[in-house]
Length: 137
Image (cartoon, rainbow, N blue to C red; front, side, top):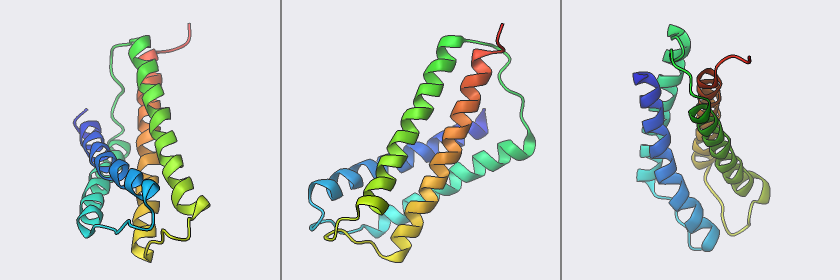
């Protein structure tokens, strides 16, 4: 669970950075200016998320021994909502592409990498939720 906690800390860091930036860029795209500190902290958060994710994969840790269907459903719902957040940010940056809001290439790369980290995190939440729900009876 420690590795999953590391992944969750990284996810919380990314959310704490991305959500205010998303709101500011959406409200006033022409006035938005990237903050280099956000990119540095995003890279730290992504490193935590990926370290936790890949270490869990490599170690093939056992799922929790207890089952709780309600908690499993809540965790799966949380995983779905985190993916909705990631896809809305993806749509805002890469699909709608407002002309007054442009990022430099490193900004786009960080956005893509953070989306991949969110995808991995979502996969872990879904898997944890399924294991807590337990086998079908």
